[in-house]
Image (cartoon, rainbow, N blue to C red; front, side, top):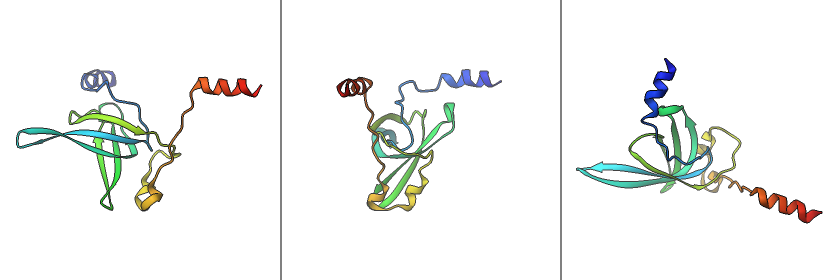
Length: 129
């Protein structure tokens, strides 16, 4: 039965979703329809949670707006989510970052992950010889 559900869901899943994890700062563009007109609205913040799998996968983004914490839960494969752009990679050790809700000011910042290229690592080893 599960393979039939996966087959039907595969038609509705998006293919152009970038790879992002909890702790990353993302810019989500949503389609908003008001009075027959449609526009794009961006929501930029830190991904504090990911849940579900397949077509029902969701992610929660948190930002501070005018001193108030704002969180939004986005369905990953929803047609109302137009584009997801990864702004910055975060370096965290937790799967859920709910502890950020209690923090204020600069404490809410997440360390940035610096990824090294394989070629740079081999160059450093060769220089040490």
